[in-house]
Amino acid sequence: MLKGFLTVSGWTMISRVLGLVRDQLLAALLGTGAAQDAYQIAFRLPNMFRRLFGEGALNAAFVPLFSSLLEREGRNTAQRFASETMSVLLSWLLVLTVLGEIFMPGVLRLIAPGFTHGDLRDSLAISLSRVTFPYLLMICGAALVSGVLNGMHHFGVAAAAYVSFNVIGIAAILVLPPFTGDVAHAAAWGVTASGVVQFGILLYAARHAGMRLRLMTPRLTPRIRTLLARMGVGLVGSGITQINFLVDTIIATLLPAGSVSLMYFADRVNQLPLGVLGAAAGTTLLPVLTRHLAAGEVKAAHHTQNRAISYALILTLPAAAGLLVIAAPVMMALFGHGHFSAHDAVLSAQSLRAYALGLPAFVLVKVLSPGFFARGDTRTPVLVGMGTLALNFILNISFMHWLAHIGPPLASSLAAMVNAGVLAFVLRRRGALVPDPALVRQLMGMMVCAGVMATGLVVLGHTPLGHAMEAGPIMRIVDVGALVTLGVGIYLLALQLLGVADMRQAMDAINRRLRRGRRA
Image (cartoon, rainbow, N blue to C red):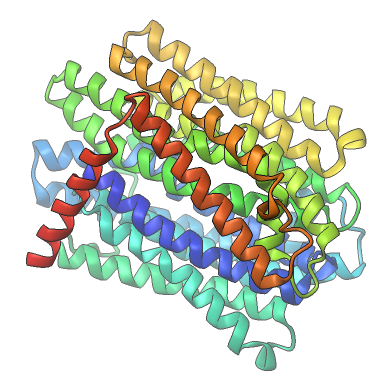
């Protein structure tokens, strides 16, 4: 599992870094005005489907069924099940895509009620959404094929394919504006084109791995009915974080113009550790847990769950602490150029701190949910998710007038904390989560080390390194880079001194891995 975790997180890190480059281009060329708001809404609609299916309901329902068939009945049965699933999935998504294109103005009324009918933001959002909406067809198909590869423990290719999204997105922003008329439409066409490329790459990878998927006449076989039942129930439970973000988006459109963009850029920074660690842990944990439980290895399943929590939080906790302390310099260093002003950076940093507060909880939800899905239980996360969704909505309404762009991120963070806490409590009551002494000791040590690192960053903020907001473009990047490097050094040293982790042993393991890779 650790090997798969590192593989997925490594490729996801590359994708997230390229994503930051793409977002820097958008910030510089569009700023936080009407065009940026319209593009972000157009991008968020299909991207919500990607997160719900790629990292949510489809993955949660399909991977355990596929892995069990592969383990018990062999490759041919698993291959037919995957082909049947792809045929049914793409059929109804095609219908959904056509309906979405036709009724896009009505769809925008639902997810962006704050956009005034007929104004620039509204008309541009409708036009851009019609360009980006077909992306959901391609990316959901890609998510299914990724589930096939993950079920076969081919984690690397599935994670690497998503890098193409940002590569093509960057190329589109740089190359297409003369042909599309503006940057927003160029970026939108890049989104849709990237979906086609990702789906193609993953289909080729699956075929190379010996899993030849083909389209068939869509049929609701008993296995497909089981899959759809689990997906239908698990859609809310596994995708509750994304539904909370959708609520945030709806509320943000009711706030002053630019709020959608301020929250988007903050979320992009927050998604770096969340996507790298949370998605990687959830993706690699689910098939491993499923196989342990299918083989009756209950103690091994408990050990795997504990280690997944430890692996995820050892980097998430310091990431959250660091973002809370140096949010403003980070936003200024990453996006403070072109049409994105220093004032925009300060406001976006306020949203980032609110997101960072709940970062460990967001990751824990992704790590704890497989504990239910691997046991075939999608009902409990739904019940918990519905409760936290209601809480998120109530908090959003409570915060929106006096916290503005800080309110939705803070509401999501508080709701995620409740979500993670309830999931852990239920798993513990059922005996499915059995923290061992090593996990408890590691978590306590990690929190202390993250606190030491945050204190160190506060102290460093009173040195010349703390003046990144006033520095020029190059120096602010140097200053923030130095702060991050020193913060990482403080954290690793604290881990070593407190005995939470042996850094020398970890480096030796990495070096051995690199040497084996070079020999291969």
